[in-house]
Image 1 (cartoon, rainbow, N blue to C red):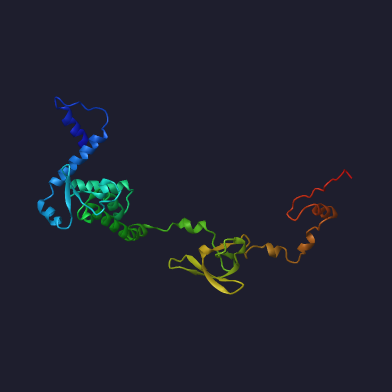
Image 2 (cartoon, rainbow, N blue to C red; image 1 turned 180 degrees about the horizontal axis):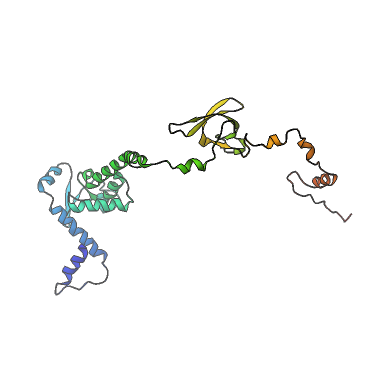
Length: 273
């Protein structure tokens, strides 16, 4: 905006060349220098005298800069001789712009980026730190607000208990363990169920081959075959092994033509013999 204002001031002059099209680098640089001069003109002389004994200043094209110890360094001129920026409302907007340009980086990263070109007295007192403290307060109070406003509004739905199959006492279940292979999870028998304060059963006492343990129902999975099924009672007194037909000779020969993995074996024909 400042560059367009300076262009307008230049174009209204009679003998000056008219500038059109997009802004050039020279116009943007001139607008930046103009804003820096305005900011430095508002800097009280008392504060400048205060830093005079600690910091060496010098002027270049009407802009006050700082003399650093990197005189013989090969770094850019703005880094070895940064421009001083006093406290000004425009300074806060510059810090916020740099903070957002760096994708909301931390305070040290934002200040390091600014110090590559500018020197800000008492830079840690800029408005950006107040904003960071405000965000830190919001994050610290998030857990309290979550507990008071959200958890207090939760109501147990009666449909939740009916979705999961209820586990009864004496049932054979699978107990979840740290082993990722579910085939190696141990089997157990439910001895007793313990209800919670709301009357819903949440913990069960199990009997394993090695002893008894207590596990929550979320870590217990029921089998398709439970103790209440009548499958075993219907087959009592009958020889189940006799009802299973044994392998025939054709099956044995057919099985011999397969490998251990079950792949069929094709005999090799040599010289058509």
